[in-house]
Image (cartoon, rainbow, N blue to C red):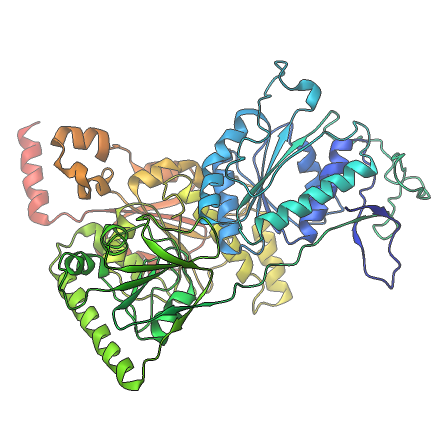
Length: 624
């Protein structure tokens, strides 16, 4: 357990973090210790929604002890705040982001992001402020049973009691610091994911204005000589709270898996480079989803879904696999999930170090934490496999060419084509990601999608968080001190960064965009994410027309599934502060190529021919 210790010698290694200077509020004292611990443990960003009970966390974060160690972002909508934090964490899981809310119904709005973080295994630190024990279950305002509300989804669930009102004791401070250390370790450990710490705060919730920062009011702390009146004792002079650091888990040991000429590699969401490396090492077909992190290379089979449906329908097809090695979380394609991985004559091997491995068809024979191919193929056999790869690619190209092309697909492919090596593309859960799965070629850019639960919640906010992290990662690279200072001034003034290498883009359908309009609300004092949002507006949810619901009566399909919205998306985005314009699929590529910064929204509509426009004008004239 952490302990309060005397300050470490100047020549020694610090045992932890300095205890906060007394503020006259135990809640603020504890908040300072919490933020100091999180910063030391690698947290760089926090997203806060406004509220009174969570005020100590605001004062603590803004205090001199943190000195900007954790970047603060403010969102007025708690769901947008949670998904912004999830986006920050998705960009770099080694530095998990924090989301902070006040008590009451505010906490409920975090649930969708916590669910996605759990199923996607993305670290997310959730801090919810709460009333102290004496105000719970007695009808106090904005007080509910929020402790443990995410218990089935989080890696750690803690309910910290409120610290002493006027000054947090040493025991209370080290308990808070120890809990934060455990939370970060759990969020980033062997099974990464969200953690929830419920923080009870007792009045006063603000620091006392007349408090002498040199006065030590903590009777449980070792005696420390008071600083002269009006002067704050330096951090080196204050007692230290020991901070527990847990070593990161080692990579799992690879297990041998048999490889044959009829083996395929399936790369689901988040599979990473290991899937591509395995396929290329053994000259195997690679069936990679757009957000797999493996959608490139000589083994890639673009257009595999339609081909796989054809192959698996014929037990004697020359391309029919007999083994599938699955990495990541495949969710997009029914030919993959049902026909390939559900086939009784296909040996399924799942590569996953966790117990919640993906096996939707429940046919996996073997699960290994990591893989290396057990393959005795000689040069001649590898050459035969390469010829088989060519046969796969040609067959997939043939089948794809026979499919009907749509203007929505063309818009999605324009965004895909605009994604370069330094760019990052975020994909919403809609028909568009499946259009790319069927039609897109290889990409050098990074592609991210919320495929944990494949929901449409918070997609714009998620992309905003990713864009903020992307900007921060690129800030200062190759710049002079003067340029960095100018950029920091712009950031504090609510501006985006200057156009530079790499761009973050979001590709979504209209319903996904409408579902997170508050993701466009960035306050004038906040850093604006550099983000291009491409909304393919086809008047509702096209995906249902490709499912079994397509056979429903047209009126029922349209009202209850397609759900037309009748919203002017350009006007809505403009009203919320974004730079918005309407384009066609033909002009989209040119629009994306133009340099710019901040939030840019491109609403893509179907291009209507001159003849169709003339015909519509005649109809309109007859009805007026």
